[in-house]
Length: 238
Image (cartoon, rainbow, N blue to C red; front, side):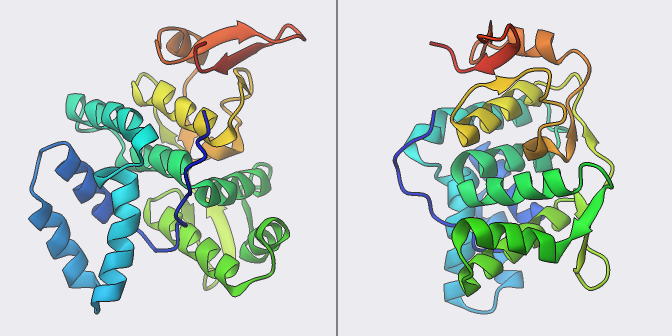
């Protein structure tokens, strides 16, 4: 499900309120003026505004061509149930179109799995191992962590030196569950174990619910099958 199209880096802090406004624009619930006012009120120069809009475009306003249908289904979930967590929807889009965001999410999920917390230094060290010891890597990692904190999934006490998981957002019974799993498949580019989805580090901010196998089996965009070891895996159809 991965595309060869180039990925623009998640290199800006994105407030959840900006993402909500962009989602509402794409859903036809408001005009672009609402988003423009929010960005104008929080950005001092045209360059900063443009860079933030670039990220929001990829997330909701102008998705990459191969993600348009996926984004539209996320928008429809929101239109059908406006109370759906905007954080979960934006998280799914970020996983699907920004590999860097997914890497940070996966590392935070793994490092906080046991104790519920880790240090920012640990995350930066792991990202440097993957992307190199560059200032850009550190800055982009900070942008992702700052965004995740604003989206309500982590706290960053001790002047940002610590990362603490917040209580997971309960998605049980929501149609966003299978859509989020599809986002994980798009990021991973391979099938995933159904039994391990609840503990998948990419989805650390969410509780998917106990009936995950049934929910996924009811989704026409996904296929449940058995791997060579006899374990249930979820994969794109075909």
